[in-house]
Structure formats: structure tokens, C-alpha cells
Image (cartoon, rainbow, N blue to C red; front, side, top):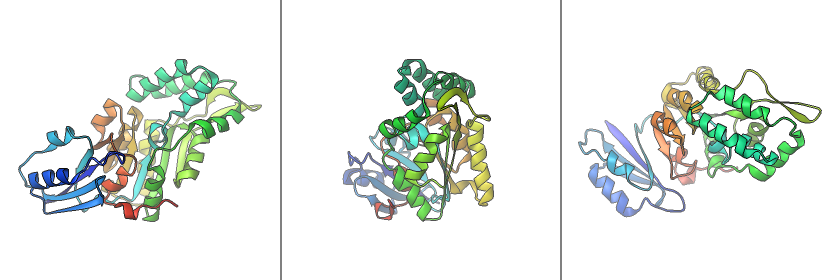
Length: 291
């Protein structure tokens, strides 16, 4: 049975060299190799009966890798986390920093992402600390502090252009998911609602809270709607509340994941940007869509 090994470098490093290509092609007795992006992403096709185990060697390299079935690698549904995945920040931490109370919030965020404390309780506790923040200030935080992760636009728009559905589901807030979706092209976005009165946050969040159950249930909803097999789904996230979603996908990708998330994911991306998810599906750079 044929398998494909995909090697993915940080775009600034170009770590997947010709030497690396030749090394793993030889070790795996490759039948075919193909550059998806010269020195950045490479496919090596090999017979899975090859007895050489190179996983430990691959783990020691300064690039990401995945071994997949080449026939089922292209996906028709993307379900993605937002904070520290599609964007480079945790929005709730940035809101707290805007108020000068980041030190009271960020450690709670990290503990929740590690799975050390209850997500719902942690969210309510942190939102309570935002009471009095002006709604107008949300726009300032978005404009000045929220940045897309490199590759986010290419990922979403390329999958859209190839007939896939793209869904952003976040334990963060609708104010931000709506705007991030506009910038990237996500077809659906779901998140928590920050309640406000008289132009200020009340310190409460709308119920029910979007959590790990919401994420996996959203995946199942669109899987059923589009009559998809599990192997046709890719999910990406970094925190513990993403684990059920990653496990429910045919390919669960941990993006710079916390340890528990990395353990649960099929693939961990720690070197490449979000275009790694396109390379994993066999897209080459010439296939990327940006507008």
C-alpha cells in the first residue's frame, strides 16, 4: 500500500533541502518525490511495506512531517480554532491588557488551554474582569492587536476555491470571529457573545458557552450536512478544548499545540505556517488562492 511522507519547513528556513530529499527518499526506497514548494514542502511516495522506521529521525529534524494515505488526503471540510491558531493572539488576553489587567487573566487562559481548569468557569471568570470595557474599544483592540497567522488567508481561500466548507469555531468572541472571517473567507463562524449595556461590557458572556463540546458538535453537524466521511475532514487548533474536534477529524492538526493537544493530534505543526495544512493535502504553492 502506498503512503506519502510530506516534509514542511518554516518558509524562512528552507530546511527541506535536496540533501534531505535524497536522504529520506533513499531510506524509504521511494517510488516518487515531488516538490510542493522548493525547499519548503516535499512529498515522498513510498511503499508502506518498507521496513525502515524513520519516525525518530524525522522527529529530530527542524521541519514538520506527516505520513498519510495519498488517496484520502484532500479534505472537504475545515474546522478551525481562532485564537493562537488562525490569529496570533488570545483576544481575551489582549482585551485584559488594554485594561491594564493582563496579569490577572493570561495565566488563567494558559491553564485553560492546557486543560488544567474548567474552560467554562475560566471564561466566566475572565470575562467578569472585563466589566466596564467600552464596546468601542473592541474595535481598537482588533485593529491594533489582532494579526492573522501567516498562511491563514491562503488556507481558507484555497479550500473554498476547491469546493470545501470552512468553519471557524472559537471559545473566543463573535466580535472577533466575524471580522476574522471577513478577512480570511471562512464561510461559517461561531463563538461566544460578550454581553453589553449602554456601550459597556457587563462582565457576562452569553449562554450557552462555546466550548469543546460545541466544537466537536459543529464538526459533526457539517459532516452530516455535507454527507462527508471522517477522512474528508481536517481540523486545527492548539488548546485542550480543541482535542475532541481534532480527534473527530480525519486529520487533526495541532498548530503550535500545548502538550496534551500535541499528544491527541495526528500531526503537530511547529515549524511551518498555516499553509502547512494545504501541503498536507497535496496542494502545491502554484495552487494557492489569495483573493
